[in-house]
Length: 293
Image 1 (cartoon, rainbow, N blue to C red):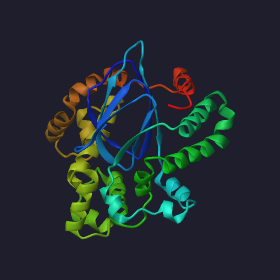
Image 2: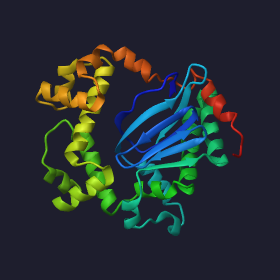
Image 3: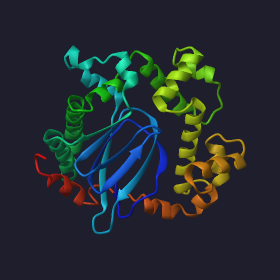
Image 4: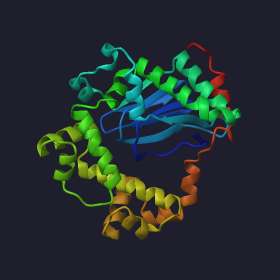
């Protein structure tokens, strides 16, 4: 990501992800945890959770530069299966008590892996073969690092967190449809009371609040991309009332959906992104970092 300006705090549902700031500063948080990170630090998001994020340090002279890498839980689980049992096992109690966000300083090994990944931009013919290998090394470094326990929770295939993750995956596929909480509890193979309690513990919100957040995020993307007008976006994501959609949209994002549609180009500029190949300072900034900090 590249931005020459700071941004206001905006909500989003974030997938499991590695985020690395190369220049500038960003603030992210959930309802009960706020983290601020800068150059040579990395953030790990362990599961699909609602967060708020804002770029808080950027300018035309020193723009905000960052990279992100989606973390596939299946690939993490396969890699973790190659670890010794004492490393790959995390207790169910630990799964539930771990935060969904973790912040650490980049190690020299992780920095070197990321640098090699970026260098492939100058060797596109090598990307299909080498990129998967380097990404596997990056995940290995993460699992061995300070945020390893947090990521091992993502890999759980049994227990309450795994059951809630299964329900979250179902909800993200079916967010545009109305449903009873009982249906999600059945997907998670939990009683209604246990499901509701653990869902709120993991995501910091109720299932219906989570669904509303996913719907509004999807609608915002439709508006920013100019694919739909306000009414079209509302009905596409599952709202039956355009006026209810407008009220809830403004409550979450600060602007009514009609204004967001009209200002779509400006919003795209605010969150301007660019490929690494278009912004060579991405790779250069990381490669110039000292090997030890």
